[in-house]
Amino acid sequence: MTTIKVGFIGLGSMGRPMAVNLLNAGTTLIVHNRSQQVVRELEDMGAEAATSVEQLASQCDRIFVCLPNEETCEEILMGDDGVFANIKSGTIVTDHSTVSVGLSKKAADRAMRVGAKFLDAPISGGPGGATDGTLSIMVGGDEAAFNSALSEFEKMGTNVVRFGDSGAGTAMKLINQLLTCIHTVAAAEAFNLANSAGVDILKATDLLQKSFGGSTMVGRSGPITAARNFENSGAPMRNLIKDIGIIMTMADEMNLSLPTGTAAAEILYEGRDTGLSDHDIAAAIVPIETHSGG
Image 1 (cartoon, one colour):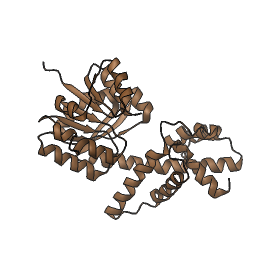
Image 2 (cartoon, rainbow, N blue to C red):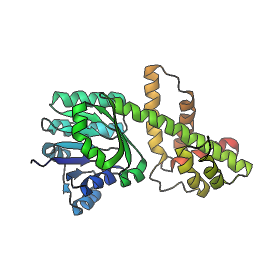
Image 3 (cartoon, rainbow, N blue to C red):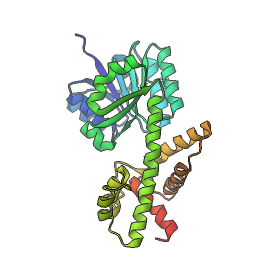
Image 4 (tube, rainbow, N blue to C red):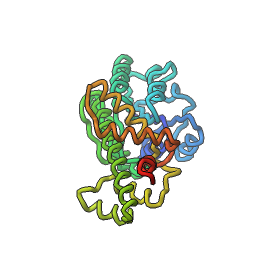
């Protein structure tokens, strides 16, 4: 039986634990990252280190990428020294990054032209879900390619769903991120009201999670807000700022009204403009407090 060689590019707060889960499950893994320290860490755990995207792409049967933004993703996948310029025919490439639907469809077209398959498969669950292997993975692309890659997906996530053809997984992630942005800002607004009314945020969080007003964002942001523990976060506001920008551009292109999304974007952009981009997403309360005179 031929051993399938899997490549993983992008070993950040999400990609590293995803790659570790693949490695721990017995995957023959080759890894690449701009920062070489994390590559050496995974090499010590049994992965093979690639010194370039070209080296990795030319050797692998499956390639997974998890990158921080659209520009980097396009460069790594479609640049002159990127994945598709060096790939073997028949390779399945999966992008776990949060990008635009347009870029996902462009990547799928490029893959087809070089005899490969492309799956857009963005993820949700945060660094905790990536570490525990409990991510939600939203997939778009060829059904046969999805079925072939499913065993790898199931090593990284517990809720793996194919939503349709190329771009469908990315679209689903953007729907998720729209709600994440809105719920994050809504929770921050509620906690500002709680503070102003003298209501203990931890007690409020516990009660809300048993009531109609509860949400995932209320549950995760409540303790962080109560402690004002906004720095050194694995879920920095810059991630939501990036995502809401993609979503609002998509809405403009589709002539969609997103009134609550627009309101959330205004708060997130204000957080960016006042130096909060690297703070936890719960720091959305800070510009709300400013407008409240807090």
